[in-house]
Image (cartoon, rainbow, N blue to C red):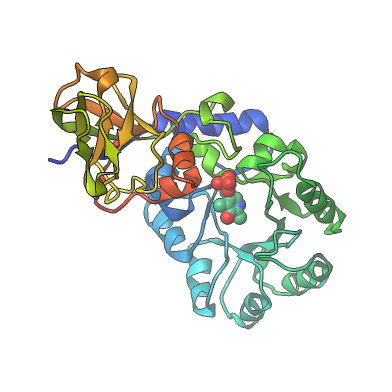
Length: 355
Ligand SMILES: *Cc1c(COP(=O)(O)O)cnc(C)c1O
């Protein structure tokens, strides 16, 4: 069988949730949208038994969690897209975010039976989803008048929390704090807010990326924040050949060997989700040593410079990110963020529990 896989470390995932608890006394809505950031929606939810709630992007994901026996609150972060989702939201006890007037109108027309808890989304400056602050009083009054609605919370999202000097976060905080809404529960902070802005924690924090062991802060990797990588992307050397000085490696022949040297071929490529866009200063780990990736990444393979690990043979394990090699490093070399790499693994790549 092809040796490429993503191994998943349940203990690391639970450790990272405990790290959130150390940083905040708020309740935790673990964000597991996009298939648990690529780790597997149900696997993440079943591993995080200590989470107070889960956040997903759609009814489909919420139903998958309920079908798997998950009992915690499940928040639909974009609410419902069509009124016909409401009966399932009610029967499966899901908690939608309400951010548009058509959703309120649909709830007013619904003849379903509650109770239904909702979060009202406030746009405090991200300018993506949510009601304007001056609309919130009316929105809450309208929702309170709908008999099936029980608890209402107030939720907003930070746009620039990863930068500690940004006036945008202070501005968003002052807008959110100025909203008078009785004693409604409040939720504001994503991973960057949890780490960098304790004043945003409120009643519920919403960690995503940090649960998976990666850092949302530029220039800082998960281990520096005492987070442990949950996913390790692995494969093996499927060929090792001695190349001559001047030999061109792979498609386009962009890389030429500067001297006679061993070149290894790793059985993993962009068809598995490894970014083809990586620059030349990125490495893989072989025998715990960094071996630079050279030439273009192919669909099923990539090449490495094995001068530092000349003793490694066909069959030796290669780590592309995870334990010992933060995904943040690969993301930086690919001109992207760790979120896209974790979410971007393809269907064919098997996920395996660490033994
Ligand atoms: C994705 C998401 C989060 C989690 O963000 P991270 O940066 O991964 O911690 C929190 N809240 C909302 C509304 C989200 O969509």
